[in-house]
Structures are given as C-alpha cells and as structure tokens.
Length: 518
Image (cartoon, rainbow, N blue to C red; front, side, top):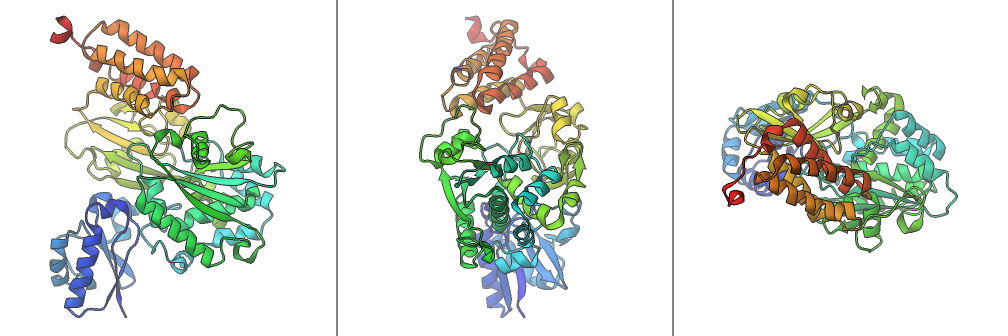
C-alpha cells in the first residue's frame, strides 16, 4: 500500500518551492523503488514552516519543514517515511503547539484533505450540513443561522442570518447569492486559504444560502491576483456539477442552484459590496448610493445575499452540528470562531482560528512569537489598511467586535500586521491617505479629494511645517471624510490616521526640516 506524503498546493507554499519539492520527493522515491502517493493538500497555516511536508505513518501525520529541494535526499536517508528523526522534524502535526492550541471549525479540513477530492471532503464531514438543510424548510435554515449568532466576517460584523431572512422574505422570482472573495486587505489570506485548501466548504455554504434565501444562482468574485484560488474554485465547481450537487436539482432535491466564478481586476474598492456588484455586472467598480441595500435590490436589481468567504464557509458546520454548538464558542455578541491572520514583522506568521475573546497579546506573542527582528514590539494594525493601530498597552484587549470598538479599533477581516520600534507612525499616517488616494473609486468628494489633501497635509507635518496647525487640519479633514464619504473607503481611512496621532504623538512632533527652513 502506498505511503501518503502531503505537500501543500497553497499559494504561500508554492511561492517558496512546494511544486519543486513535490516533484523531487516523487523522483527520489522512484529512484529508491519506494511506493508513495504524493497528495497536494492545502496549507495548515503555519506559514513559517512552508513547504511543510507531512507523512502518514501509523495513523498519524508527521511534519517536516520548511523543506527545500536540497533537503529531500537527506529526509529519505533519515527514513522520514517511517517517522525517522531529522533536523526538520516537528513530530505529529496536530501536536505542534501553534496548531494544537487552535479551535478549528471553519478550517477543520484545510491542510487535511485533497481540496479537489469530493470523497475525501465527505469522509471528513463535508455535505452533512447541506443534506440537513435539504431536509429542512428554508425558513428553518435561516433561523438556524440567525440563532448561531454568525456575523459577517468581512469586517462590518452584520448578522448573517438577518441578511438571509431579508432576502428570503421578498417575493421576487430571481435572487442571487454573491460571495465577496476580493480579499485585498494587507496581511489577510484566510479567504485564499479556504478557496485553495477546502473549496467545497465555500460551495456548500453558498448552496445552503441559496436554499435558505430562495436563490438559484451564485457568484464568487475573486481578485485576479489569486490565480490558484480561481483555478481551484472552478475545478471544484465542475466536480460538484458532475456529482449532481449543482444544477437543476441539487443532490436530487428539486432545488436548483448554479454557481459561477467572476474575476475582478484587483481594485481594492471592489471589496465594498455594491462596487463588487457593479463589477460582476460588467460595469466600472464604483460605489452605489444606499438605499436600496443589496438585500432588496442587489445584483441586476434583484434581491441578493452578499457574504464574505469566511461567513459562508462557517455555514456548513452550523447546519451540521447545530446553532447551539457554534454559539458555544466566543463571547458577548461575537459568537463562534475567527480565523486571525498574523503577518508583518512577526516570527511565526500564519493563520490561527480561535474563539472570539482571545487577547491580542496571546495572538501576537503567544502564537506569533513576537517580532521577527527581535526588536521591541511597537504597534500592530488590525483589520487591514483602513484599520486602527494598537499600542503595547492595548494588547490585553479581547479580540471581539465590541471590545475592540470600545478601544477605538476594529477587528475587520481578522488581519494583524505587526511592527517593531523602528516604524515611523507619521509615515504610516501619510501612507493611509496615499492608499485611499490610489484606491478610491472617485465617486464622492470627501474620499476623492480628502485623501489627496490629507496626504499633502501629513507631508507638511513630516517636514515640520506648522505642525500643530496641520494636525488640527488633519483632524478636521478626518471628520469630513468619516461623515461625508459614501462608503468605508473614505469613511474608515481616518481610523489609522487618528489612532497613529492619538497613540504615538511623539512621531508627529517634527522639527522644521532644512528644506522647509530655506
């Protein structure tokens, strides 16, 4: 019987040579006359160990990493196929502390299964939620999701079940499910990991949403910078169609549901739901005025559920295990688990799925291991380029929607980007305005013009020109952008700027530069 050797096909692993490692392992085994089967799985999320090679031995998976092509021969010499010791050995994968201390619900199969093997998916609990949903009335499915407390994992935190209930209650004959997979926040990669490592989980969540809301078509909007995710999702959809799980009658139920992938051009603004809908319709990605909200008049003017990848991928376990099971995780109004993505200047970057309520300190210091540089931690930005910065004395805040909001921060998509004490926070404030200037759709004046004027004003502060007056001007400009912008692009740009000024005022106390003095 072939020995299974797992080598990730996740983009992060591919970027550091996973394809070459997989090829070298297969050739080395052939040369030695050894019978192995190389399985291309998703990533376990311990990105500093990629490519992470696993060997199935005595019913367990043993981890070796990071493996380079030059390490392959020595792994065979050490007898890694039988669990032999090696400098790259980490023991049983599930017992590595970084992995063992997580609560994996949404990511339970990521890194475990072959992403395109439906039988493997089903053997690990897949389709159980869908089949339960097919045996329920649509309204019962909606209420199960409402009861679970699932909130949007895309950043806003709006209750998922309420969106579904709104769309389900409308009489239109055509409704849509749209998955926002335009993952553009800095330091975020959870959506990509799901699509590349367990695409069927996302598909299952979308089909359940279609049954619940009465929708017969779904669209997954993926940015063009994710070619591997696009290819994997398309291949997974074909597999579902061939298995009779998509089409005129889902699993023979009589419920019709078809699913399509649409590729975005990489515009950050298309992460905003109405801009995404415009793009799917073939138009330029600009923000729509609201009302009406997409649940009332969304894609092609029809009622539309718009959810993030992580929201939809959380649905199968909710239906499979029940709302009470899911709701038992978390705290307050933040129920279930959140996949946190730890990046930036951090020793052990990767994905950590934990119940809401874990502290930022445990995520950054416990899982992340502190800064990669070894220098003192200074700040972390939460929730992408429009998220707030936090200081060291805020690290004991629990990671949940309300607690972070009270501290002047936001959870967003769960991205955490770490910086050491060499960061210049005035430069980071300038970057926030510059990012908005580049990525704004240009539809509203507060965002389009405010970002340009904000960058110019911070540049004056950096040059030491009328610092106090220009800081006051920036604050006034931030009020205008927050209150007057059509969407979160302009409305949230002030968040990183204001948090930088509030928490690190010393970085804005500039002496006049020589150029300014002349």
